[in-house]
Image 1: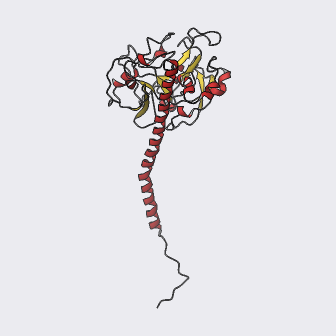
Image 2: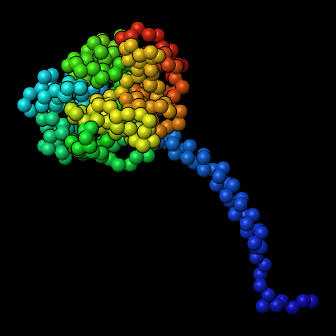
Image 3: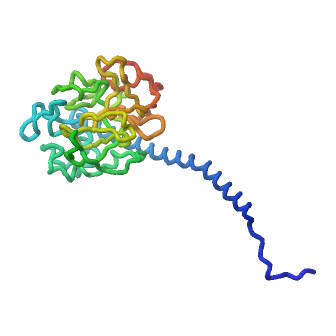
Length: 327
């Protein structure tokens, strides 16, 4: 019979066993982490989809009240002492209020809209407070840039105003209308939403379900706002897209699909292109971006979408035939 020795220590893990356990835990984490990240991204993408659905509902409520969809942004042709003189490059003047600001009363944001003096230019000091308000519906949770405002600057780097961000932009069609120094874009912009547009349902002859109205534009590419367009401002790419170039202020609220007239070869701007310009759609979802169709539905446009289909979806009356499985 052996006597129990209370001084003997209980057996424990050896160093090798401990290392094996740590290695097993590390392998399990490595296996589970992608699944967790994918689940989180799925939730963020769902929230982004819901944001666009709310905007789609607001667009149709706006149409019911005003008889047309909101303009991309508003200018006073020729300008005046309050709205300023036309920008020589774009013919932009005040007030500059963008589609995002015009939708506020139809998105349960009447308080914010009331804080804006729409009879003054969007960059006026009287609009400083309202223009910096964060609208959650205009922010996609997948965007890595977490700042809620940004400084709007001109080509010389002078700050013209500070605006609240938006991660969405409106489709002006195929053509980069802001590249032309004309007062009226009606014959240039073939999309549903552009400067001073007043497009109603009857004008979208391609069908609302076949026409892209809004889409994502992440701050990882360039700055976008729901507030408005300031004449003379520029929109520049982030360092990640330094191969691109700065563009005029309209690209802070509008995008286009390409091609422009006379381009040879035609240049298309598909969503999430590795060669994205500040005037194109870009999201931080893998493989493409969410787009709002004119009927209020939300589709996911693949970055591999046909270069014939993408411009067709951008036009409101191009007469193209697009199948629902071509996204």
